[in-house]
Length: 583
Image (cartoon, rainbow, N blue to C red; front, top):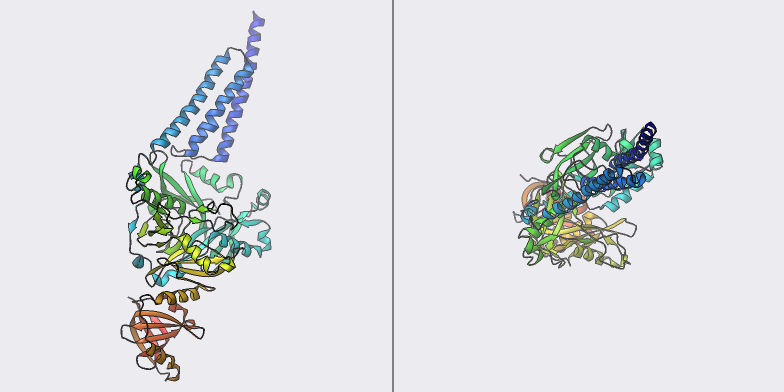
């Protein structure tokens, strides 16, 4: 009797050993996968649902089956079988719920709610976009060109380039009213991280997309918590430890007005059902030097933070509005009033691509406005007719959206028109930005060669995209374009006054101060020099060589000017200096 009891105890210990081993393996597996995948512990997180179904429940059922095969026909087999059934049932029920929750939260059942996530307000284009500051506020450089300039700048710093790379994740920000692209350095691999982790990442690159220049900014203290770090100094892992329930979205690099570096992680929210109506509820701002971070709701995010609502998300939200405002069935069948953001061909795609349509990706331009970065893109009908019916400008910090009713060519057509002007050079156009020139909506873009170097600037009239100008300098392109469109409705100085004004240099140099309101502007090329002619409300004509003061490019109709000038014949004056005196 005693020997039989002993044998049963031994069998129990043997049968329990596989169970303990498999349980430990399962726990290690789940812990390791959580460490690697970092799902938010949030019912709205798709990652959490997939983690529970595929990482937790399904492997548990497999381990139960393995255990049953190991212990064979013992009394524990039935219990183990039940455990396997429960695990597979949890996985199956979880997957079914995941599919059903996604289905019942879809646009089919909540069209009105999706259409109201982003509701743009209609604005007057010429009033909302100020011509005077347009050129200095637009970011003409795309990310590919920024990467090229940033790498070139770092390439001259041997002590940096051997250990670090420039991250290709450039962020578009507003710095003191001007657009700037910024990107932090990355560790150049695991072993470079191990060798430099004590010092951290030493700096970042700042690129001027208007002046086409780059600058490396070295920091007094290195950044320790960055995306290219490993283990618990990996930025996302560090933030997950601090905010286990937040759903991170669009983690990117920015700097404040003092040049201090920060990483900003937008926090996603789902306003329709469990997984629908994605938007942003706030942002986490992390200091990468010491790892400290603060969460801000959208209404309280600091003004220097620019990229909270990612451009791709804003475009998707506008498409919900444009396609679903008249109901889901209309978006499928009638499509009355349906519109969407335009798409453009990927400008990096080769001319030799077998499928010319394979590179279609949404894109947009950037404008610095009111201290924030706004994305711009055209709006077209869902019929893809290569023309725009309007434009949207959306604030990336607040998601405030402005809509302009302006019909004309879409961005792809404008890009093709600009490329056609210099087709023999085979330059490729960047995605354009939208500016106001003499109250006419105008595309402005850069043309790049095969190596990505900016060669020319181009301007294309939105309403008449056969009106195109190109030049090696932006101010020259602007002057040529204003001259091109000046024959269409702007006031023309009469020929007698022009001839008389050409003789002002022979007249007395006695200057006088005059004030007037600009009623008309004309750019005229004379012997290779560009002259600006202004007509005033005093019925006088004022002239100045453009090269004498390039701020003339910002003068627009209805500006009030005070000028020091020399009188020529009649009511013609040669300006020596001027100042805008708008109230």
